[in-house]
Length: 301
Image (cartoon, rainbow, N blue to C red):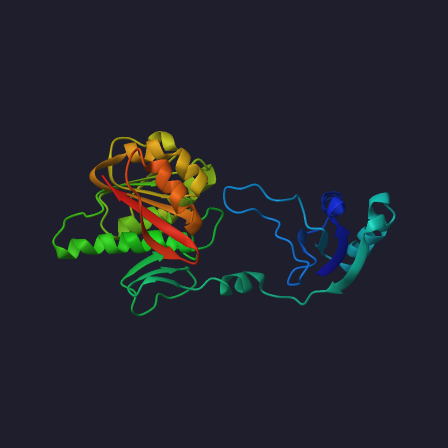
C-alpha cells in the first residue's frame, strides 16, 4: 500500500478529494496542516453550533493506493490539472503491512463505569472484579462507554439499580432511552433490573445497532423509531446534545411517571442555565454529575 501526501489551500480541498476518489484512491483523509502549532485553527464548532468555517487554511490531504504505479499515475494526472496550481506534493511512500483489525482493536480496551460495572469489547476478557458487564464493540452508532456523557448516564443507572439491594423492587422501573445510539444505556438499564425498556432513535442504523447489541448481551428490550413510545416511564434517559434536549423538553417530561426520573446528558457545563431555563416550566433540573467539562442533569416528578 502506498501513501500520497499533498498540501492544498482551503479552496482546493473538496475538488482535490473528489479527484483522488475518482482516481481509485482506497481512502482519502484531510487534516489541519498547522495542527499543534500557533497557526492551528478550530474547524468544528461546539455541539449545537455551526462550524466557524468550511475548512482549514492549509490542509494535508492523504490518499492511500493499492500500488506505487497507481499512486504515481494519479499524481501525474493531478499535476496536469489547473486546480493543482496552488497545491504541492509532500511525499509518496510505501506503508508497512499491518494487521489493521488488530491495530483498531488495540485502541478499545475495557472501560470501568464503577468498580464492578464494565464495558468490555468482545476481544477482551472481563476484568476479575467485574460483576456486571456490557459486551460492546465500536460500531456506526454513538455509545461505546468512552465518552463522559455515556459514562455519567451509566453511573447514574448503576447507582439507581443498586437501591434494589436496599429493598426497593425495580428501582429503574419502566425505562425510555430516547436517542439510543448503540443501545448502551438501555442495555445498562436491563442489566440493573429495569422491567420494561423502550429504546428509540431517529436513525435506522442506531435502531439496528441497538437490536444487535441487545441480542449479544442477552437482554430484552423494544427498539424502533420514536413512534413506538407510549405511556409513562419511571426512568427517561436522553443522552443527545443541548439544542435538541431543549426542543424536546415538553415531550420528554410528558413521559415521566409520577415519582419517576428524567436524566439528561450531552450538556456542556456552560449550558447548564440554558437547560434549566428550557425545562423550568416543567421541572427543576439539577446537576447530578460532571466530568471533563460535561454535566448530567436530572429531575424527579
